[in-house]
Image (cartoon, rainbow, N blue to C red; front, top):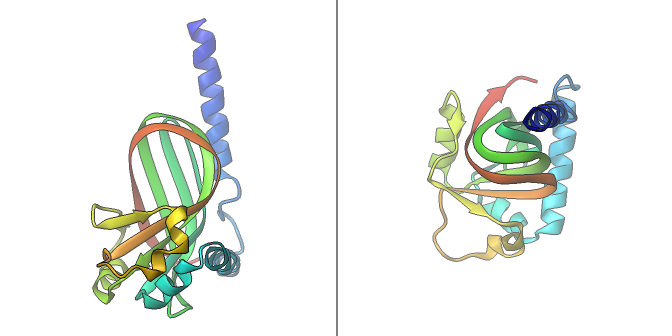
Length: 184
């Protein structure tokens, strides 16, 4: 019985990682495909969560990651590509890679946006050789997306909004995500 569970788990894990490699922009048409996905993601975000339009207008820059594909079975990972826009204009392209370890199983796809609320935060992001998410980031839920742009309280330097989740991944993990500038 243990061998059968292990084989099933291994087969499911292999399938989950194969899914993670699908439809995430690897081997794509480069900048034009990323640009099209980022534009569609920005439009979706502004229409679904109207407060984000105001938030983006006040941000020094916004990194849009239109498609992150994640899978895990004990060890997990995610990958996606996106673009940094300043005043609505794409200035750089980025890849995001995430690794995790813990009690987890499943696969999902989602989008996220990082709103850099100060020029200093944006500069640190752009000047770094790679930027890992740390404790100075504030995560906002999609439910906050409708009103987040109208907050009058002091905001963190970076606000992350994760939205458009499809699929299911369950468990508790330790993870980190790193963003690296790319040339598509």
